[in-house]
Amino acid sequence: MTKTSKIRLGQTKRKGRGVFATKKIKKGEVIECAPVLVIPEAEWKLIKKTILYHYVFTWSDEPEDIALALGFGSFYNHSYTPNANFDTKVEEDVIEFVAARDIAPDEEITINYNGAGDNSPLWFEVKS
Image (tube, rainbow, N blue to C red; front, side, top):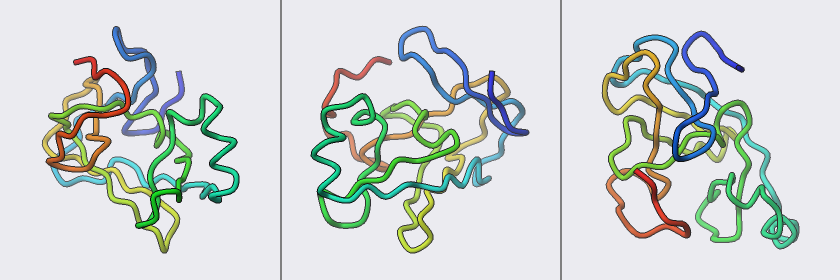
């Protein structure tokens, strides 16, 4: 099990690996500031054919700009009712994950892959 003082990587029953709180995290608290590897458009065509396709974030306003979040960043699972939000900080090459509400110890931390409040369908079947 990999962990920091606030979070750990663990197994979920339905979604595979996920990120869990190791202690109470208060609403508005920064959970993690994950550095990213920005993947150039030319390499994205290759990444689409690998497992990494499922672990990247859209980066900037260009649809083909993507980034792989390091740390726990690419392991947060999706929820349409997430307990955390994320903010891509393009100039800093980081993604900041922030608690949207109080999160209890051992609770899975989830984000909305579409962004806060966007319930558009995703490219996979959403498991609750």
